[in-house]
Image 1 (spheres, chains in turn red, brown):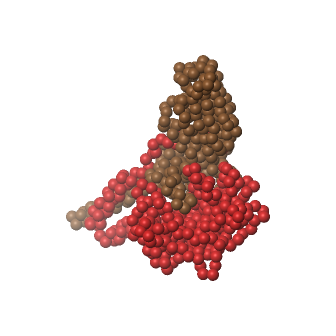
Image 2: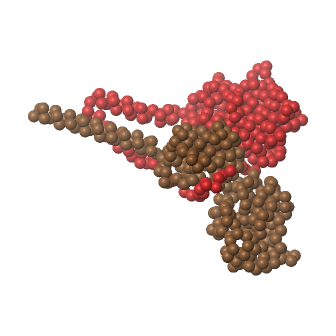
Image 3: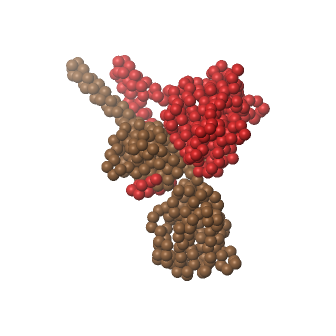
Length: 290
Length: 290
């Protein structure tokens, strides 16, 4: 808990203005003008020298503007804050308590639409939940311009939620994401590659019974992870039941779901099982080949 | 003459080059400085935000008295802004020490917690399929950086109902933050007992209509004004007693109860009822939330 020597402050006051973007832009314009003056008068060698400087300064902005590592802009209209989920789910047999869900998930880098007034993201995660009460998940998320994090989230149907953001794993690798539930302490543990990122004790006593692996976007203008020729994979999906010392890991036999109806009867995202398996799946966006 | 011109030309060249260099340096300084704050401009992270963080299991604590960070709070704020998932402004910075529950930090690590106000609205990352759009936006934002070198450790956001109720109480009444102590006048009545000296101290509601007040578990002692109509002899009760405990009654000079100090015990709902004889004079619904 907070120590007594922590000073109190009003967290709701107006923020300090750190965004001196206008001043910086003015300075950039000033230097650009000076550079043009200089280049016009002082020859090609200096032109080359300053050209290198300008190129160096401009490079990060150009890289950001180019967007994402995989995929494509699907070119669909924006309808932000509508959830689109493609993935698989499975209730534990007999609704016994789920002790864990894990899968190797591609760290795919989809196109994410930049929406006005909100920081949006695409994500892909494994999740345990009690659908009437709460959910706990871990996976990757990507914001517009390829800003990525590993994240873990608790959410309750009452509205409360908590997100933890950590440095992301490299794109086009895959990661072993896992949520585990310990029934004796009502505690959830979140792992990426076996490293614990967070643990959270649920405040009420309901147990998780549903396991899910989904890729999620929040506007039709963003890409569902994967392309028709470059699938986004979820490998070796397995879940642990019943929770506690008597349980064990089982290959998933999850039910694929795809709720990416685009409003005109068609589907813009797809999911399929890898042939001959019940624990490997892949997703794609019909508008993108890769 | 030719030699003089050549000398002047070289001189102009040299001066121009230096000027250009200074201009570039100014831009670089401006870019690096964007988002930075002077240490004087940052207050501590508010206790309300600290409470929201620790309520979801982080358990950061105040540092030891001799803790010496390697970087200042303004540098920490600058580093936090550079790695935050949400573009915005820093509003507070506090030095803290991690515990065994502050993963992925090693216990005892010295960190800076930097609270932020994002420029855009931030919603939960994932959630139950199809349920996301109904959720509230996050109401607290903190970036954790290493106090030695400013390296990004993690960022956290979320929606805390407790924080929301505190903010709502602050907004809704300018009389809700007064300190009740013997001699304080409330509704024309002088408080005779029930000195409350330590925060959090918030008068969440007063009046006679039925209203609902959420109070977070673990949020500490709360004072609820239940009757301000100077109703002499009103009998005030709270039921069921398992959800909230009455720690203290505040009595005014007329002899009636004007307030209760309550502590939430477990999730649930309880109702405070004030009656004079058989007549209902006040009712207040309290909800203990996570």
